[in-house]
Length: 326
Image 1 (cartoon, helix red, strand yellow):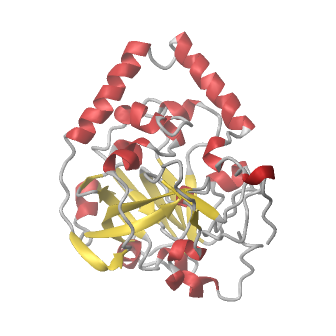
Image 2: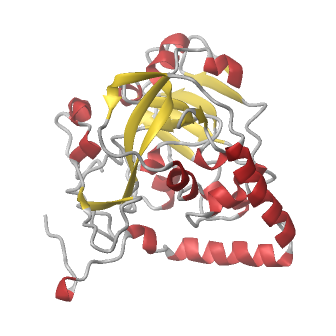
């Protein structure tokens, strides 16, 4: 694999420091709308920001038994970093936007419909979902396609527990996740940066892998709004955008779902999006990463691991060309 280096040993900027043109333009439009007062006045946004942090400060505790089979020994990312540096475009395209604006999200009441190619369709409220299977705490790495990573103690249960209850039929080959897209609760949805609602998907065997976590909490508490409350996916061997947030519908399908980022930029974001240091993003290398919280001037980037270090998923892709199916 050829990795280009800038002259004099100067590294290229992180992907998180490179704003795609369409995002930049939509953000300008978003800011313009704010200035015109079409979304909220400055005082209202300040109030919402305070509310979001107040909600985190008063977060509901969520007890779970640690599962030693799903623990990485890396130093955990601080709660502050994990909740203030996020991608959640429903609340804006800057990393600080979700923490600032997610106070408008109302995670209760909440329902998730499970439908499609299954024998037992369900509609679950949040309390029913919390009782569906024993909650576990798992410490996972999560790597962003932009070149940064975190280590977070998540709370939830294997998605396979839900799959068993709804009994997919013989036509089910994929699982599609659809996120909330409510302009009243999510100011970023007013921007055309993506074709809303946010949609993600997995092959059924990927969804059944024990690592695929349906998450309802982190750091011993319910999920903060900006991290995908009240329920999201966590897929530690894939880039972070594959882990759909604020899920309202799960569909089992015969055909491969048309996912949000794959529709928006198919040459940059493949359906599989497994962490693979040998497949560069068209605009930056994926060979190294920056661990959030390790930002010292002399701190060296980490070498990116295949499947983000979760080699137990390799059998899912036996015989596949992972450069073609990126």
